[in-house]
Length: 87
Image (tube, helix red, strand yellow):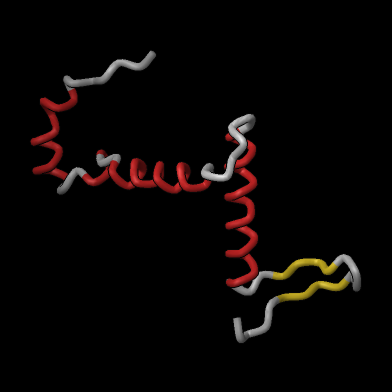
């Protein structure tokens, strides 16, 4: 169990004056990522949601690899190939 450290809030104004905006303390960018996780589990069978989410994100990573010019081994020709420049 973690306990919120409210004592830190006493020092926050001094930290903002010294270091600038407290963007490192913001959790909004991580909380918005929860939406992506929820969307990735729409088609889950709810028996293994972590596995289904990993498969979904693995597919996203494969697409990103192909689109950004990554190479992969073609199992039929056993040669390294990549997508054309028209993609």
